[in-house]
Amino acid sequence: MQVLTTTCPYCKQEVDSTVEHLDGPVECPHCNRPFDMEIPKAVVQSVRTVDETSVNQEKMAAQPAERVLAKVHPVAFRSRPVAALLLLTMGIAAIAALILSAAGRRVAGFAFQETAMLGPASLLTWSCAFVLLAVVLVAGYWVVMSRFETLTVTDDRTIHQQGWVSRDTSEVQHDDVRNIQLDQSLLQRLLDVGTVGISSSGQDDLEVVAKRLANPQRIIDLIRGNQT
Picture (cartoon, rainbow, N blue to C red):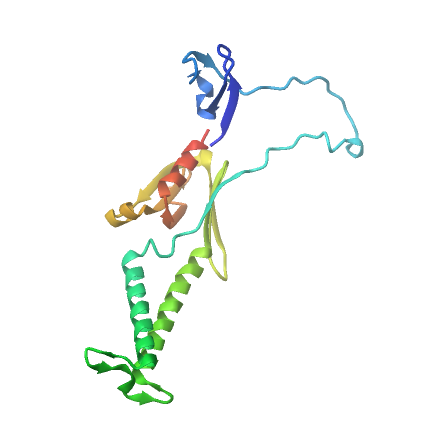
């Protein structure tokens, strides 16, 4: 969102507004009086022809730099609450069994260290170790894959990049956006996670589909707020 600051012509207090209010009057939050707001314009003072080598680059104006408003990755665990809870339960159970086995404790008459042996450790110890390794690998895979998918929102466009070995990039100019879809199940609404789909005026299908985003409504508001 681009915020413009001006001075109220009546009470002389600073007033902030957005570019959406440039087409009509705004109301001062201090004195509650309406006035028109516009972006200042520069007046051309002279026109001359010069050689490219003699141009003073320090005084040469340039296009405004593209500003990054948001750069987000899919959430790894909040988007999979049931699977994440199952992984956590399995990990805690495996660690607890390993500790009890190493300590030689009994639980409800069951001795962890007296199970069948397989090499230097018991079969139960090996099983717990494999379960714990599987939990770490699955959780790590979720985290790594989420880092290799990025949705970037600038003041001009939305860019979606995904891929590990190969890279797939899709982008849509904000001014060309025709439709924005937000898909959320009931559980996702409670966890504030969802899928954002974007299509432009020249395409029938969604050009950008970003899944498992945290606070997806914020992304939509950023896109809508930067459309002219």
